[in-house]
Length: 398
Image 1: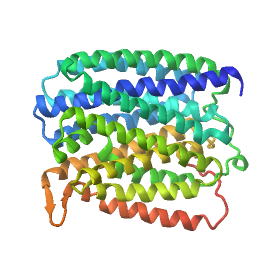
Image 2 (image 1 turned 60 degrees about the horizontal axis):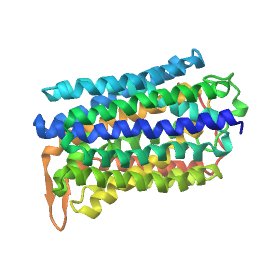
Image 3 (image 1 turned 120 degrees about the horizontal axis):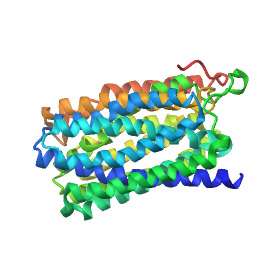
Image 4 (image 1 turned 120 degrees about the vertical axis):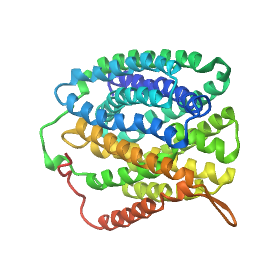
C-alpha cells in the first residue's frame, strides 16, 4: 500500500477517535441536563435523541447523492464536522427540551453529512481483501473514544454543561482538520461512482438482504442509542450519572474490541456466518436488557452493541462493491437512522407502561421490541436458505 494511502487511512481512523470523543462527551451531558435540569419526560428525552437520528437519516442520503457529483465534495463532510463544533455551544443557552431537540436536529443533519462520507472514503480506498478489518478498526477507535468520552464526562460533571461543550467543540474542530488532511492524501483513490459492471459486482451476500437486516437490527438496538440509554440505565438500576456513563462506555468498548474478530471472519469469506451470528445476538439483546438486574441489563446492552458494531463493517464491505457506492453507503446509513428513530420512539412511548413483576422484573418498553426480534430471526432463516444457492450479483438498490 502506497504511503500517502496508508497515511490517509490512518488519519481517517484518527478522526473517528476525535469526533466520537466530542460526540460522546456531549451525549450524557445533554441527556442528564434534559432530564434533571429541564425536567423532561422520558418521551421528551426520546424525542431529543431521535431528532438527531431522523435528521441524520435524511442528510446521510443527501450526502451520498451530493458526493456522486464529484469527489472534491467529500470536503463538505469536513466542513459539517467543524460546524458541529459551533452548534454544541447552543445547548447551554436552552431553557426547554424542545429547544434542545431543535439543536439536536442541526447536529444530526451535520453528522449525516460528515460520518457517512468518512465511512465511504475508508471503504473505497482500502484494498478489498482487508476492507472489513480496516473498517472495523475505524469503528473500534470510535469505541475507544466513546469510553474515554464517558470518562471525560464523569470527571467534568462539576464543570457544568457550558464547560463540557467547550471540550466537545475543540474536538469537533480538530476532527474537521484531520478529515481535510485525510481526503487530500486519499484523493487519488476516491471514486464515488464507477461504470456499472455486473460481472465485477458479485458478493457473498445479497445487498437487499443486508439492507433489510440493517433496518431491523437498528430498530432493536435503538435502546442503546443516545440519551435514552443513559436515562434508562440510571433509573432502572439506581446508579448515579458518573457511574452510568462509565459503565455504558465500557460496554461499548468491549463490544468494539471483540467485534474485530467478527470482521476478520468476514474478510476470510465467512460473511454469511458472521451476519447470522450478529442477527441472533441483536434479536435477544432487548429481552436481556429488559430484565431489571445489573448483569442482564449490561449483558443486553453489550450484545446489542457487539452485534451492531460487528455488522457495520460487513455491510460497508458489501455495499462498497456497488457501482454507486457513495449513495449505497449513504443509503444504508439513512435506513439505519430511520429505523433507529422508529425504535427510539417505540421505547419512549412505551416507557411509561412500567414493569411486569414476577420471578424477575421486566421492563415493558424493552419487551415491546419482541415482534421486531422475531422478524430479525426470520431474516436469519432466509439468509441461511440463500446460502445454498449461487452468490448473488448486486441488484439495483436505489
